[in-house]
Image 1 (cartoon, rainbow, N blue to C red):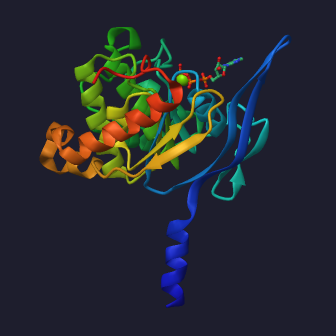
Image 2: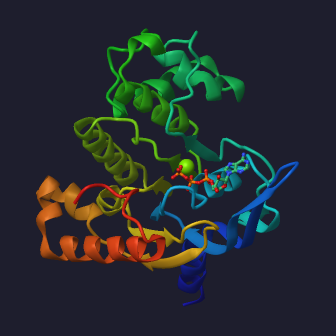
Length: 277
Ligand SMILES: Nc1ncnc2c1ncn2[C@@H]1O[C@H](COP(=O)(O)OP(=O)(O)OP(=O)(O)O)[C@@H](O)[C@H]1O
Ligand SMILES: [Mg+2]
């Protein structure tokens, strides 16, 4: 009995917690409040999508969690430890791929493991495994300038994956890709989530992307961003279980999509940031 409760507690323990996070950009002449009183926790294996209108503070939030910015007040914890700077425990993928131009695909992906001084053989084995997972087999010796946008993001994903981080943080990673490549990349991320059981936090302003991936969708208000509402869709598994893109035509999908859209439009008063219906 006690053992079961212990196990349960361990499983329930959040990977990431934010408590009362506020953030203010302070310039010489003016300052901007970007986030207001953000508190939430993310459990292991969750796929959290954060949605919100342009300028509401999504990237600021991701940078705070990544350890690239310090909150003005409040705290960010990974497990029990405060986030004090960037770390490989949090894999980050940005909208614009930030690859090393002088390194080929394999060396870009292996970079983090080399820095962590893994033995050569192990680096090779892990790198190969993730090159395969993201579908880059055969492209190992190409340089970033020889790759398409989608392929570059595959490298970015693999580069974060090799470190087997505790959480993946992604800031509109497919925003610059064409619609078809975007769908393929979403399918890839879904597969990675399923295969690795890892925890994901993805920032997007595309409601369909949040429903195609998220097990939880959090909507932020317009600037200064605060949490407006949360939804718990369950379409990710259905996309995985062979229903494919047909899921998008299910009445419950359409209903939830409408509900979330209304929430965003209702508070921003504009649909300019939203995808065409
Ligand atoms: N370096 C900065 N200095 C001052 N203000 C900033 C800075 N970066 C962002 N801001 C402001 O903070 C607010 C939140 O910006 P942020 O980039 O986090 O929004 P976002 O939700 O990611 O927007 P988008 O959807 O357009 O990417 C905005 O009002 C923005 O103008
Ligand atoms: Mg942004």
